[in-house]
Length: 316
Image (cartoon, rainbow, N blue to C red):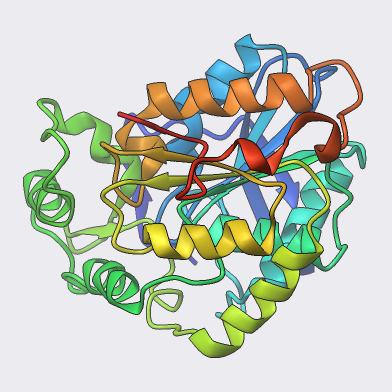
């Protein structure tokens, strides 16, 4: 099943891997396959395309960057049972890692993908070398999640035009400059037989709600168990992860580093690809060089170097 026909101009996936239960997972890759593997996982309602610029930067820096569409998103298959919980996402991640040779990857995850990455490492499902969490932590704000849910629930009957799609995105992300060319939206929607444009994700994914109390307990335990180099990147305009939520994470994982991208919202990489890519590469270059073993956090980070707020630094 799918949301409809892919529009002209939608990039074909470079790779397709088998996930749990034979679900096909579409992915792209950048860089030399011999470089250190970095797996990029997007947020709910996004696709692998959210990582294109970051992937290219990582590839140019000597890493092998891989991004894939989560089940039910983009060019990946929809789940036959309509279930899209954290555990099945972790199992899909393990399938992709196995298909890529069972190396020790760096995991970079935004929002939903960050939760998957944190559980994968914190519960020892994946033997990773480093973790980058993008605007996600155990403590998040339900008001921000409600806004995401409301956006994803817009126009279930479909949009009449790409301009209508662009207007919906602009309402949800008023801090972003509206696109001058609507062709770039082709990868975000599918065209139905009724002539309506619909989002690329399985509508059964949209209404699923989490038990946020249970989620916070689980992710808190995972954060406390982290022993790999860890970077938390927050969007300064985010209403999902507040600075207080970020500080809570720093207390749970005291060896972690923190960057606050002041001019970005929840979708940090999309808002400030340049800043995000630069900061991630600077972090990885110190701790997980492209062709060498990573250092232990105790060798490279002294938590006492943080200022009184616990931040390492802010970037515009």
